[in-house]
Amino acid sequence: MSEPDDLLRVEQIAASYNHSIAALHKVSFSLKPGQVRALLGANGAGKTTTLRAVANLLSGQRGAVTSGKIFFDGLNVLELSPSKLVRAGLASVLEGRHVFKSLSIEENLIVGGLARGSRRSELASDLDRIYALFPSLVAKRRISAGLTSGGEQQMVAIGRALMSRPRLLILDEPSMGLAPIIVKSIFETLRSLNRNDGLTILMAEQNAAVALRYADQATVIQNGVDVLSDTAEALRQSDYIKEFYLGSELPFAPKSRTPAPPKTSAASVDHSSIAAE
Ligand SMILES: Nc1ncnc2c1ncn2[C@@H]1O[C@H](COP(=O)(O)OP(=O)(O)O)[C@@H](O)[C@H]1O
Ligand SMILES: [Mg+2]
Image 1 (cartoon, rainbow, N blue to C red):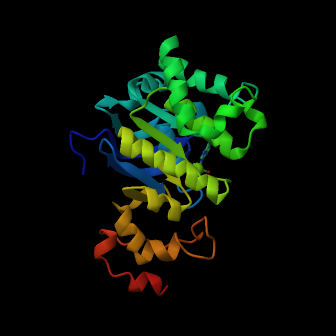
Image 2 (cartoon, rainbow, N blue to C red):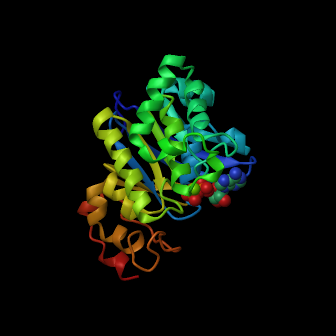
Image 3 (cartoon, rainbow, N blue to C red):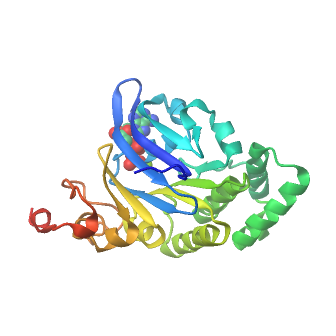
């Protein structure tokens, strides 16, 4: 599966919390430079845990990777502190668009630049770049981030991560709780960063419809196991994905009981037995 030119390689990781709760059993995937991969799955499947593992942030949650390996640009992620990973080019927007609520929008962005060790002149040009990506932040740059809308806070959280000039951006549920028009605007911005700047993106999304529209590849996680990986295009056509992740019953969440998916690639499998259940 993995090749030497992968920017990120996750090899058969297992992870648990508090030395007991097993959250991940076996998750593998890889990302080449410039790719966008979505992690799909029901609530509790292990998407957030996987992202925390990739940013080496599990210990802050009393969790740990118990087996398997993760490489970012050839570096052993599990041996590097989260701040070293940021400096190496891996930035994350986790835990529901966390912003420093009492700091202004601009101060929040500057914090992201300082995490990388940016100089004054670099900070100024990087701020200009973020405001160009998210023009609605300009007029509110002096306002406390806590007083802005959910969409603006998400833009601040993404902007702060971009201030560290990442090569890989990790996003946990960027669409969560946001109006469709804001979701569209944020995903269009992410797409332009990917296409124009070659930014590699790994995102977890319960909103499979949106994720599969913007991702190149996707991996479905069920109960801590990667059960299906394919191109986003193949997964959009897959009856299994249509039935259990793009269903109309719960537009933004998969149904709670999802059966085992086909073992081979989504495009080449007969799903009639699954659909009939
Ligand atoms: N901080 C935590 N402490 C203990 N258990 C956790 C913690 N975070 C997640 N879990 C558990 O790990 C499993 C996977 O959760 P999570 O990675 O958050 O899934 P998802 O992001 O797909 O909803 C769940 O059983 C969840 O209850
Ligand atoms: Mg989650």
